[in-house]
Length: 273
Image: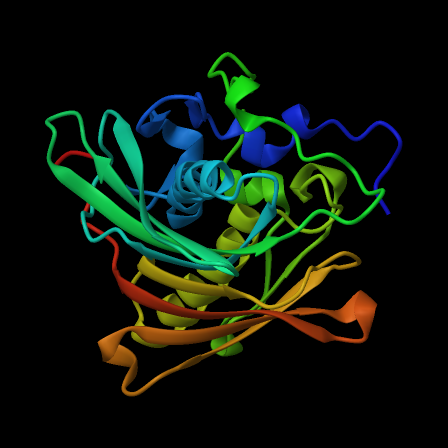
């Protein structure tokens, strides 16, 4: 259960540094990577999941009218193994249906070149009679002046590798990893899956691995924790395709997320570093 002092603006996702204004047309999100949100020479895939979920979510929220929207699936492709100076993202509608909304997010680097691409689907739900009123996201301002992370992302999130050979990691479900509904926030779900896939790949392939692709299926809310993973290769390990499942042991070991990931060798550091 969340503590009485829970403040969404103080959570780790809020401090990653993605910023934007949902009322813009088209929807835009800006993100300037810095060391604490990077590792092994790349931007954490989970940080890009946050950018994608923000931009696509704002598109979906606008298209849903009075309905609430909840992320059900999110796919990320980030094949560029480097850290750009800035990631400028634009969201656009792909489909608006009665029950779901699908959006795409294009991420460009400081040169205007394609850096990553994401697609997300959202379930839309009508407000319950007597339930809370949906906030007007067009009035929200997600600023970049919030305190940024002061330690590496995985360290701050409390990611613990329990058994790299089986891709088992554990993450405590603290308030600063939750969303306003009290569940593990979507990008932190992505971080947990990323950590599992990278741990499995690095152990079996013998060199550091990083995640470039994620297909995340949010099945249920993780509300108790600690969140635990299991991972395995799909096909030969050298192909780099990994299946990851996230469970909530505190809630009957419930399966909360299913993920397909791709790992590749981390880029070599520049000469002299």
